[in-house]
Length: 86
Image (cartoon, rainbow, N blue to C red; front, side, top):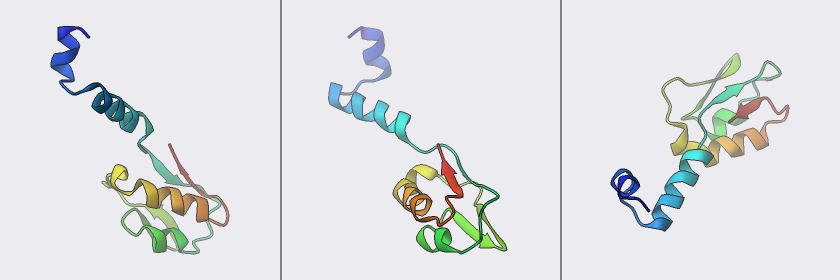
């Protein structure tokens, strides 16, 4: 590895790999499509991210990385598959 790269990422090789995987695989965007029936399941699973008030919505200013597992569970549990993320 070059000295330049070592200065930018002064971690061991396995730590660098884990860092890049986390950066590439982390959820950066969450949204609810119009097909939402406002059943409230997403809010029950992950109230830190989802709010249901007539329709389901995603709260602003949430760090999705902290709730990735719950977001994925909410998306998989949605009966109309209205929760999307990338």
